[in-house]
Amino acid sequence: MRVQGSEAGLAQAVIRRFNILRPLSVEAIAALEQAILEGLFRAGAGEDLTAEGEPVDSVRLLLSGWLFRHKTLEDGRRQIVNFVLPGETCDAYAYLLKTLDHSVTTATSVAYAEIKRARFEKLIASDRSLAEAFMCETLLGSAIQREWAINLGRRAALERVAHLFCEVYERLRPVGLVDGNSCSFPVTQMDLADATGLSVVHLNRTIQELRASGLITLRERTLTINDLDALKNAALVSPNYLQAYRRD
Amino acid sequence: MRVQGSEAGLAQAVIRRFNILRPLSVEAIAALEQAILEGLFRAGAGEDLTAEGEPVDSVRLLLSGWLFRHKTLEDGRRQIVNFVLPGETCDAYAYLLKTLDHSVTTATSVAYAEIKRARFEKLIASDRSLAEAFMCETLLGSAIQREWAINLGRRAALERVAHLFCEVYERLRPVGLVDGNSCSFPVTQMDLADATGLSVVHLNRTIQELRASGLITLRERTLTINDLDALKNAALVSPNYLQAYRRD
DNA sequence: CGGCTGATTGATCCCGGTCAAATGAGGTGG
DNA sequence: CCACCTCATTTGACCGGGATCAATCAGCCG
Image (cartoon, rainbow over the protein chains, first blue to last red):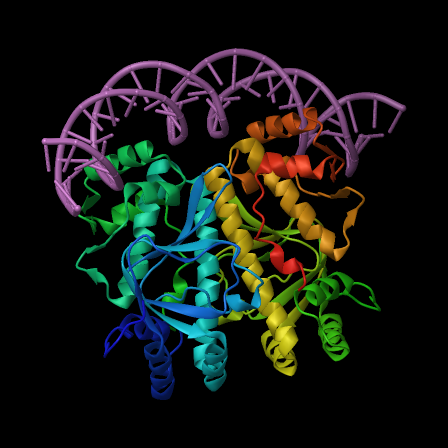
C-alpha cells in the first residue's frame, strides 16, 4: 500500500542507524531522506514482501515494524534466518543477483521505503559515505548471519534463546527503540521457535525457564531484560559481531 | 610466505569464477590478474590467516586450497560457519568494518593473493563489472550463510551432511575443480563435525550411513558422489541459493 | 456463543551427545 | 627396520535434551 501525505519522522530510524555506520554529511542525510520519502509504503502483518526465487529490482528500508527472512524445506520445515528491524536495509545491492534465495515476510504491520534500482544507484553514486553505509549494512548482515550459524549449531536451547534476546535488544538500542530495559518483541512463539531451530513446545519451556530464573520478562509482545549482563552470560554472547555499531 | 617467481595459471580459478559472476572485459581480467600477481602468498595447513577481533586492511583471493571461517564460544565449542573454496574472495570490503567477527584458518596448504585496501579500491574503481563481481561475491556469501542457517537449524544429521557435500560439489564445479563425479575434500571429520554442528562420533556414523547407502565415497581426502540427484534428494537441497553461478 | 490462533502442560520417545576405548595411519628417531 | 608417538577414524555402551503427540487453556473476533 502506497502511503499518502506527509510522513516526516518516519525516516528517523534509518538515518540514525546510517549515521552510526558512517558519519553522514548534512547533504547525504537530506538525499537519503528524500529517496525514502519518494517511495513510502505500508503493509499489514503476515504479508510476503518478496518470495524466494523472485528477482528483485529495488532496495527496501524498513522504517517501522519487524520483518523476518525465512527459508522452507519441501516438507514444510521452516527456518527464520534473520529478522529485519527498524532502520535496517532489506536487500541492498540484491538486484545484482538473479533471484532471491529466501523470502521476506512482515511479522507486524510495517512502514518501509522502496528505492528502485536506478534511483538507488544514483543515490549511492552521489555520496561515498552513503555507499559505504549501505555496504556496511550488507557486511553487518553477514556477520549476524554467521553468529546465527554458531547459535543454531553449537548453543543449547536456553543459550540460543537468551542469545537471540540479547542480539535483538542490542540491535534495537542504537535506533532508539529500547526503553529502559524493555523493547518491543512482536513475534509469536512459533516464529521464535523457527528462528532458534527449536520446536514450539520446547521453546515455550525454555522461555519459562528464562522467566523463572528472573532474567527476562516477556509479556504482551514486550521483552524486558532484568539483568543484561547475566543474560549475556547465560547466552555466551560473542563480543565482536555487532561492533560496527560502535563508532571510532 | 611471500611467493617468488612466475606463477602464471594460479589466478585461473579466480578469473573463471569472476567471469561467471559478471562477464568481464579483457581489460578487467588483465587488471584483476595483475593485482593478484602483485601479492601472491602461500601458507601451510592449520595456519590462521585472520583472527576474530582483528581489523583487516586488505582483501584476499583464494587461489588454491581450502580455508574455513569459524567462531568459538568461551568454553571451546566451535562452529565452522563456512568454507572458502578456490576462486572465492575472502573478505571483500571487510576493511569497512572495525574488526572481523570471525577467524579464518587454512584447512590445507593454500595459495592466495592479498590486495591492500587502497589497491583494491583503485581496482574496483577502474571497472564497473569488477566492482559488481566483488559485490556478488559478498551477496553470494550471505546467501550461502543463510542456507547454512536452515541446514543447522532444521535439517537432520544425514540431510545436513549430504547437503554440505552437494554444496561443496556445486561450488567447486564452476571453477573446474570437479573431475567426473569426484572432487577434493581435504577436511578432517572433526572439521566436518564442526561445520555441521554434530559431534565427531555422530558425524562419523552419519558418513558411514551415507557410504552404506551407496550415495557417496569418501576416501583419502576425495569425495565421490555416486548419484548426485539421489544425494540432493536426501539433502533436501534448496534450488535458489547458488543461482548466481548461472549466467543469464 | 463458536471458531481460531497462540500459549501452556503432560507423557513418551529417539536422535544425537558423551564417555571410553580400540584401531589405523603416518612420521620420526634409535 | 622397528618401537613409539600423534593424530584421525571407528566402535560400543549409555544417557539426556529436545522432538513428537495430544490435550487443555486463554484471548479475540465475528
